[in-house]
Amino acid sequence: MAAEANKQPNIFVRAGKRIARWFREMRSELKKVVWPTKSQMINNTVIVLLSVLVVGVFVWVFDAVANLVVQGIISLCTGA
Image 1 (tube, rainbow, N blue to C red):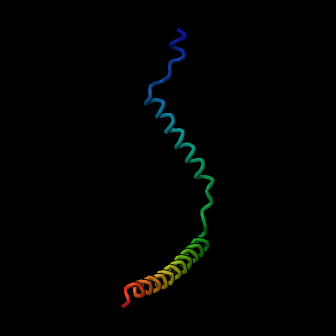
Image 2: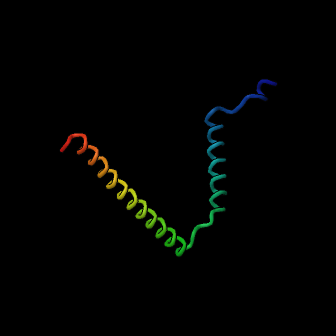
């Protein structure tokens, strides 16, 4: 009798309970989410686009300068 009392349900039952608990917890966490307003979304989008543009220009300038330096070193070494 003691062995039957300690017996766990099979793996499919345990997995089903874990998945169900995960969905319940996810649903309760999603209720806590505060979604941004339309103006906040537009403002954040503009900030991201400008940031990407600034970083892109910085990388482009750095790449151009690095290219000039490498070409200068190559021309010095080859004597051309």
